[in-house]
Structures are given as C-alpha cells and as structure tokens.
Amino acid sequence: MAHTDHQTMRRVLRREIAGTIGLLTDEHDFRAMRRYRSFTFSDHTAYLRQVEDLLKTRAAQGSHTTVALFDPQEYAEYCTDAGLDPDIQSSRTRFTAELATTGPTIPYDGQPMADLVPALVDEAVRQATWEYASTLLARLGACASCGEDIGRAAFVRASHFLVRILETAQQGDRHLVCSVTGTPEALVSVLHTEEDTDGATHLDEAEALEFTTVLALGLATQGPGGLVMRTSTPGAPDRIYGWRMRGEGLEPLTAGEVFDAYCTDIDSGDLISPESDVDYCVPPDLGDTGPTPGHHH
Image (tube, rainbow, N blue to C red; front, top):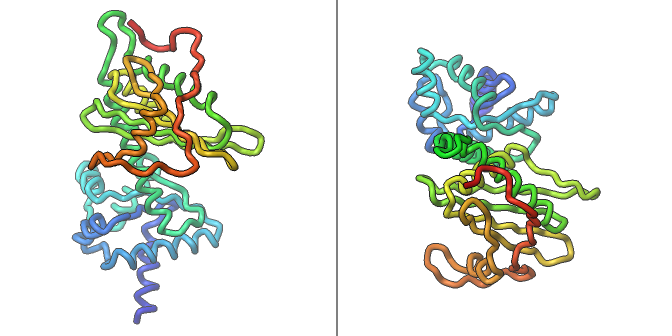
C-alpha cells in the first residue's frame, strides 16, 4: 500500500512539473495549500522527500529543472486576478510557469534538499530586497535644483564605490555586507566574490545588482548605514574592515570601531571574544583622485 501511495504521489508531482517546480519550503506554506482538495499531500516532510526523489530522477534522465519558491498567498492573488480556480492542478502549473520568469528560482544541480531549501529562501529574500530598494530609489525622483534623477545618480556612485572596494581588497575570497537602517525597513545585502587561480574575480550578477542597489539607496538617503568587508586568503589571517555612510560618500571606520562592532553582542551589548586569526584593521585607501560620479550639490 505504501509503495502504491509513493507511486501515486510521484505521478501527481510529474503532472505539475514542466521544467520548473514550485516548492513549498516551510510547514506554514504547506498547511496553507492543504485547504485545496486537489492538493493531495498531507505531510510536509514526505512532500519534500518526494520532490527530491523527482528532481533526482529528472536529473538522471538528463532533464534540467528549475526550482521556484511557491508562495500560497501570491498564488491565491494570482488566481483571483486571472479568474482561475485555485483548486485545480492546471492553475498551479500555470502559476509555476509564471514563477519561472518572474519569481525567485534556482537551478537544481544535485544538491540535497537540506541545501536547496535555504538557498531558495535566500534567493527570495535577495530578490525582495532588490525590489524594495529599487522602489524606494525610484520614489526619490528628480533633484529640485538640477533635475537629475537622484536614484540613478546614486546607483552610478554606488557602482563606482563597489568597483574601487573590490579593486583595493587583497587577493582571495571577499565577503561584503551592506546595511542601511535609515529606511522604513532596515535592509541588509551580502556580496560574496571568489578569485580563481588566474586572479580573476567571480561574483553572482544578481547578487551584485542587489548589493549595488542597497548601497545606492543608503548613499541617496545619506544613511545611516555601513559596509564591512572580510577578506580570506589561505595561510594568512582574515582581514576585516569597513566604512560608514557619511553624506553621499563612505568614511573609513577605525580598527577599534570594527573590533567593537564584531565583538559586541547586538542585543545585550555584552562583549564577545574576538575570533582567532583575524585582523581588525582600517580599510585600504579607495584612491579617489577627484569627485565620485553621481549627483552632487
């Protein structure tokens, strides 16, 4: 009987997948979909296991599969707007096809479900952060004095800073964190770059776009916010340094300020033991010989 149920669930999943599968990543979203009679899964853990089995089978057959984050609330709104019955399989398939082009997705390349789920959630957060920051940038409009688009100019300036920060960092892997707290919702963006054996830097373009947009928002609204860089090179201590957003630019943090930021518990204010084999230091000179590009007054 259990084997028959297993086969039935696999067939149900196959009908709902066409190159992209919409994944319910958490128990809450899974329970929300159970209100539809046509959604026949009853246990989230078993559902994830079935999805993973199907992904493995498709990969073994040479099929490429994209995994998208399936949000039940967005699905219900989509069905309402499109005049679709949400309680039929074809509506879910149509919504999932839409997710393939507009929603958070990651390719399946054999990673276990324990890695795939958090990666997909991270991608969803990154996309939402980028969309929110982009919206706030666009709302800034044009400068009353000169008519220049403030958000676009800030993006140009942020791109300039990011290039200089990466150019002046030591060789190795870099981990950059940008935080902006002067907006209605505090935003945090992370950019990770790696260096190959030839010294070429590799980064995720979507990650870089989101990071630059968040940095641009901080510069355009003049903070408060900051950037912290961590560089890692084999055989050498990690280096940590950073900048605070000041006006329309970046101001270097002292080594002591970086140490305090890393060695203080945010919630309690208590001191935390510093990491071993880590240098807390001042950032390298970004080497600007003139005004940064972008909007200035």
